[in-house]
Image (cartoon, rainbow over all chains, first blue to last red; front, side, top):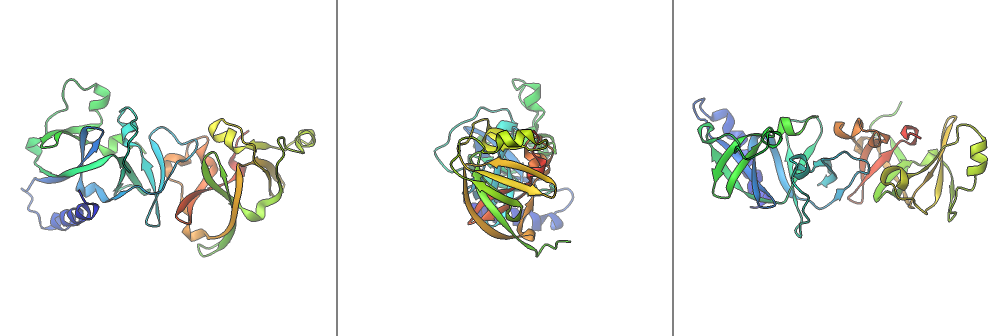
Length: 163
Length: 132
């Protein structure tokens, strides 16, 4: 999916928030891949999506920090969401994406492998994480939703990013 | 008192597979091509002299690059880097404070901020925060 299209969807979601009636419970999620698994974040928690071009690793940084990224002149702290979720490291042949987050004191972003799509989800469609997931892993999610790309884990950002 | 518009010359260097910088006016001396710090023996005789191989400090692998002598007031330390790159004038307002996730860590607390040099991110190091 094109980063420009994602940015347009984020802006559309933000514009729509003011007009949305209270009973409207659909929330748009950006779905992205880590390996072959699909994960989702609400668009309202995102700022933009871009290819990672300048990632500078920070020596001595804790587990979960991929480094610092120059995103058109702004320096973002890039978090390794794969490591934060306890997933195995995987060498990718393609340049990863950074998903810039909103609502944190510091400029933060998540490094993801690729973008899947944007899905509109109602609260009723969200199910508990599968029983096969460990309690530690399940605690990182608000739930899961079955979408065309697979079982999408809805990440609980506040819990995963304990700042 | 410094304002965000204050421009400070920074000495940019490479260490621990990273671009780092220190305030250029705090660098008093540079020794090239010596495998051991030329004044380590003398330095060890004078209490308070510190030696930091930054490659070793941050990533556990020793460097064979030059040593810089950093001084601030009565404090000082020898810093070994992999190579010195440039001196660049940087506006303090153009620097980004280190994120909270890095400020509290033992090693990364030595970095005050991050900046850009030719689109490349560098880390502003405060040698006074290195711990022996």
